[in-house]
Image 1 (spheres, rainbow, N blue to C red):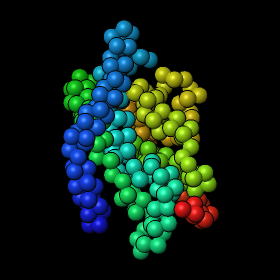
Image 2: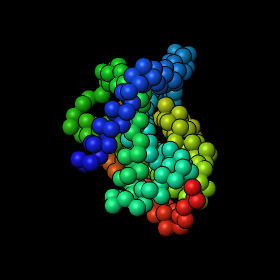
Image 3: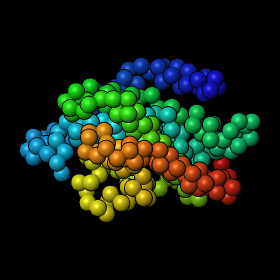
Image 4: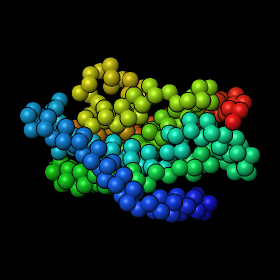
Length: 258
């Protein structure tokens, strides 16, 4: 952890060398995410509810997914940009260093400019939570925290899958953005509105619904089944096949010849 904090300090110092560029990027990220908020706002002013979910509940759902994605993109950016690490030969240097490989990939890039998304998610939280009429208790607070942490884990797992496939393709496969950026976009609304097929896909294959939809039902009081509250814990198991794929790719890596 001490070494990771040292890496964090280096990245912070590096990005602060160009302060104007950094803050413009933060503002750009905020504006880009704000357009998604406007999309929800204009649609909900027209239809008022979506599948019996009012505007405030949709906003809370959106904020949870946005917060989880922003944290994953900030601290797991090394895996998201792994194709460049692989292509320029940097990964070959990582292999000969006496530190854990996953740790080194994580520490290669910390994208602090993603704080723009984080700030917007925090603002939406501050607006939506008092208006959702949730009766807050220890279990509801625990559920909310668990949703965010589990969301970071699931998005991080998707970035690891993306990086693992780069061992065989060298270049990143853009279709995986369907589940990363696409998952963030789908997560603007509760997954049930997309139909049973999509809900099953994001439950049993890519477990986005396990941290977004099911615990959200418990959070807003649509169910009192404790299994819904603990659904995000099951999503942690998603990391097992992700790391298995990573180690499989690492085992078959033969350098890019850079």
